Image (cartoon, rainbow, N blue to C red):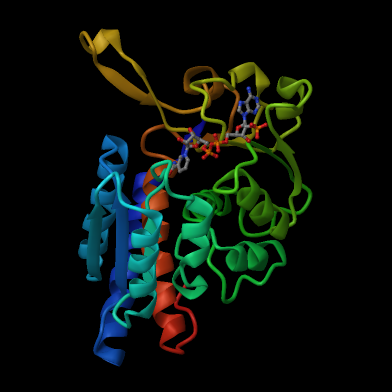
Length: 298
Ligand code: NDP
């Protein structure tokens, strides 16, 4: 029987723990963790993501602030806002929703966020801490961190002897995912658009992570029997069966054929997606503890 990994349930558990620790933190410090989310422009998908992050922060008992700026906001104005949030004692985590409009250099914005408030884990300082194994004080990007929790649920924390293939080498998902798997002793291969014979490579994987952004690209016959498959992809595709103009979400893995080969697999939606938001809450809580000089709760 293939195990369909219920990311929603695991994420709900993470959020419950965050709520409990937030209550303890409040008793101890007389303040609550603060998360500021910043959106520039009116991209509908970004609006949905930002709204769900702010809502979850409120549910966790956080001080939750949302800044929505016009699409033609200048880079300088955005940087001034970031500096203000950096200096704001009530804010522990700053998240700037990507992508940003083209007049703004996203790299410059990310590097302006104070590393100790960079709950997305994209600042060079946090990237360096992850790749050098300095996980105690750094922040790991939320999507790979959440994927790793799901992998630990199946295999435990030590992946010695297991072969992992990560398809995708983005700074947001693929590379940090590979670093986490390596830190857990897996033997890791990173594949990308220039990889030769991707199906054959995927068939070597005990753990296969797909972070490609191509709907249902990875087929069942690419999957080693008994593998764990983590599908990070979120792709909106037409769903004429639901009615004209309707759409549905699918992953980068062809779930129907893959589930016959895998021993465990994440669905889309309901797999990695909910974990990303839960880990954002966990990172914000962690930031609050670290900034209060209290060690880390998770
Ligand atoms: P990027 O577009 O930044 O990276 C995609 C990667 O896939 C690149 O490294 C690219 O290779 C590789 N790739 C593209 N086509 C192929 C191919 N035909 N064969 C092999 N490799 C290929 O995407 P992200 O990493 O940001 O996101 C990946 C997916 O995850 C998307 O579907 C995104 O929506 C989803 N996502 C989901 C999140 C969640 O919360 N669940 C959060 C973040 C992302 P190359 O580098 O050579 O171009």
